[in-house]
Length: 347
Image 1 (cartoon, helix red, strand yellow):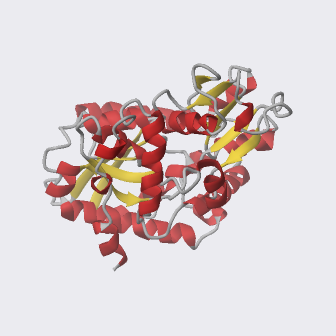
Image 2 (cartoon, one colour; image 1 turned 90 degrees about the horizontal axis):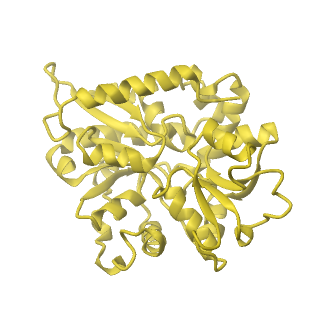
């Protein structure tokens, strides 16, 4: 079953093409009618780890704040990040670690709403390899799937291997496996032995018997066991210049997203799924509800960044990101996130 339907793909492609014709993100975001207009790229809009963005839109929380939000999608966070840097969009819903990575390249980005304190990622293994790959210690000689080279799943996979003395490129091979049906096909066809992905792909693999859970970072306990601490991931991040020039707009986005996080924490997976576009569930509504239920505990309820978690992200990147390696001490961590807007939203 493919939970990402052709309709979703067509709509996403149309949105991305439309963004190319839009004006630069550094221009004024107010429309002629006075309503604020913001374009946000999501690193996989149908991934449950980024669910708050679409859910806020579905619940009407953005419009309630007087802001029109256009949501587009790229299947890898590194691609979404490029859309922000090029000025095609004003914000990205993606992994927080990109703000650190890009600071070392002279770019100032900051997380304005931290949606989750853990990655929500799961290392899946094919049934054929489950008997011999029982932990990251067994990665040696294996082909491991990541969303894209240079992506957050790339860095996390390298970190997991390093904990057992294994090095990417030497001891194991990372393969770009994408997400959704592309990832499923890669695992099923033996192009990868194991790989990192998220719900609803995880739920699809488990229910179909095409994959088994090896490492689960959808919970704080699982994340701490795998990564030695919290790893703040899903967030809304924007350029520092945009945030400083459009604080009222950013505050509206924060208000909407914090309200959405509270909705998630107080509703079941089935109740949340009922608010999402019907095509996100594909042809298995129950499985989609389960995937949300299995993952929703990853989201925090206030949008705040845990400072110790941010430090742990820097520690991981300093070992495996080509941009951050050797520059850990020069990273100004406090400039990669702010709680100014979520503090006000909670107040």
